[in-house]
Image 1 (cartoon, rainbow, N blue to C red):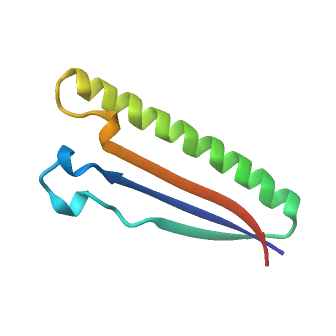
Image 2 (tube, rainbow, N blue to C red):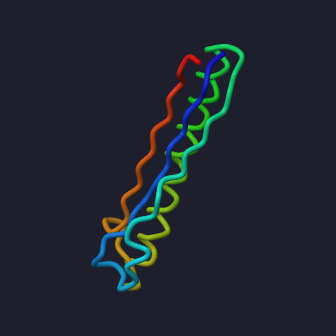
Image 3 (cartoon, helix red, strand yellow):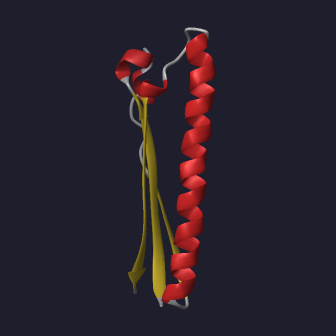
Length: 87
């Protein structure tokens, strides 16, 4: 049995907002069991690709806001980690 562990978090630079509650959002942690290492690694690969795309889309949206003087992609920090671990 294998377990896929996925951690995702993001935070906003304090200079970007006056709302202190938005500065640091707690990470989301998800665990999913797989019957084989191969299936776990396939899921890991798919998830990592999806997270990379999501980060790129978020930053592109922030670039649009930056042109309006509303936001800057450098103000958002995105972090994730995906691991397959034997159970």
